[in-house]
Length: 156
Image (cartoon, rainbow, N blue to C red):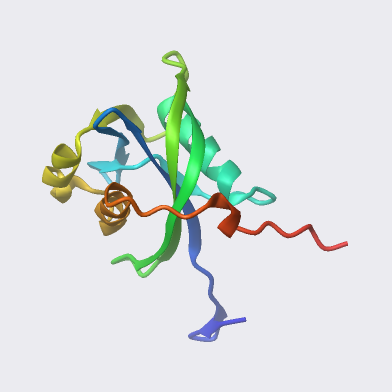
């Protein structure tokens, strides 16, 4: 257990999916704090959910795309200006099918496909530095087997 300023501390655990169609990356445009920002399909891990299941769910909820995860890209730790700490688990995925009629999560304006150059050029609009860092690792071929992530059985 870790304490900070006399209180229990734990980071926000998030997942993100990096999926490509040809030479374009799946991204989302979303409203955060009154700004229109770009991110990967990403979101928080929910109770009783595996990291893999969370990444698949968040991608569908934010983009309408069903993906098949193929690899683990990495784990990233970041402290936001607000003081919140994030631990992001990033995955490589392949688009399987799209439901264009699906309602997207609140705050999501649209899903879009961007070339790596377009994503990099939009750096001022990235939701956080995690967007380009995870994308650049993915584009450089960083891949680990999904079996790296161990899901232990629940305690009796």
